[in-house]
Image (cartoon, rainbow, N blue to C red; front, side, top):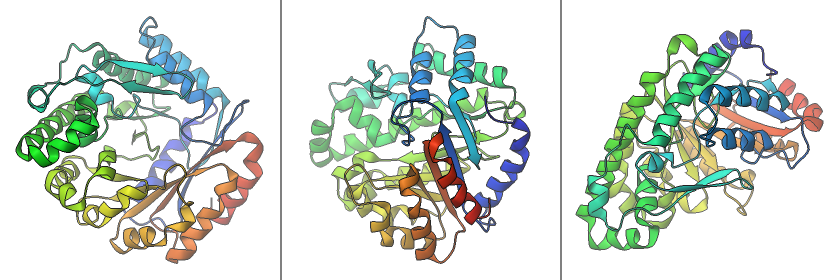
Length: 365
């Protein structure tokens, strides 16, 4: 792996200053891929697909998977505040831990979960099973990665998914939308139960992450933290009104933010923006991750989002995919009049290194 783990103490201090609002510059993480292929996209990089395949190949012992992860990262160069990370993918894996069937889409580099529950009653009763093969695999991989890398990689919680997203996945979105109107009490009970299973899984994985064997906690959004952190989400919220969001999910979001020491909210796409005002009322929430979404206007077309996040005293994180998007860093910092509290997770091809270096130097890295 092309990363010197002796850098972690310095990077840990940088991130602690960022989390606490003391860092005067932005966090800029740059991962560059040395390989053929599309590159430049955080979610579609070839090495991520290799790692996903290995994690879900149950014929491979977890010790061998850790070696494959190590080898897969050989093609990645880390610049600025970037670090290698491990967490169990994909988004919504809590559904798999609860028994959902799943299939790997190797071309897209993700896993799709299949509808499982015929009614909300079943979702109200479903429980996390410690003998679930996928859950056992994820726990064993978390242990094996810590053993193999011995402090050389950030380790994080699996990408559990959002509570309402999991309910929608278990039930199917269309009937779930109707039930929000027709059976609100049952919807609330189902969401509450999945929230309880989320908490159980959260504690289960914290018990196998050894603070003495990692340089810090991480997540699918690859920041570093001396305290556990998580990116909370509710992509299902794009289909419901602010009133429904506040009734069925906001209380859960408040509890999640009290449970987890550090939290970022994943605001995904134009249809989720209507809920930002509610999200920002949660005092324990540390920050907001803004993703404008496929086909939506670029990151420089949403000034009010950045202004609201900044005015609420929250951190803000965005993804920069390829050197062509580097100008968004200037746009956001100029708009807010400060670089404090901003995190840019950047990815690209090794051939773009000079452009990324120019921006890192510009912002004091």
